[in-house]
Amino acid sequence: MYATYHLNADELNADVIQALKNAFHQREIVVLPKDEYDEMERARHNAAFTGKLRDSIRELEEGKGIVKTMAELEALASE
Image (cartoon, rainbow, N blue to C red; front, side, top):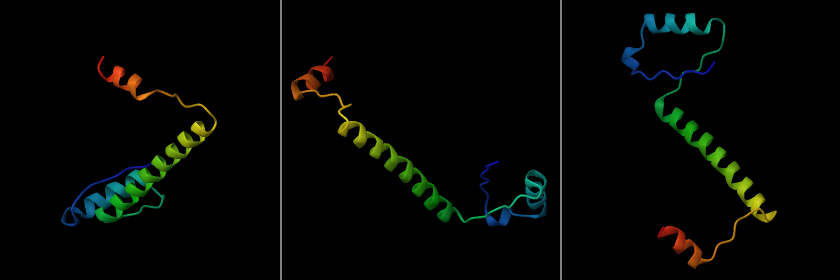
């Protein structure tokens, strides 16, 4: 189970902690400051994007690309 809770430090109280305990039982819980969470998310998205780029490059190298002249592209754009 993956969940993200957004709250300010002053909102963290015994009720919230108990709700987390009830939701996750004996599972490990990680609490991160927002800036660290944002950096992890950027890295995760960058890794996914890099993977897509590698797949695209591989497909081009395998000849699976579509070749268009500039005139063909301009014609498509004006449709």
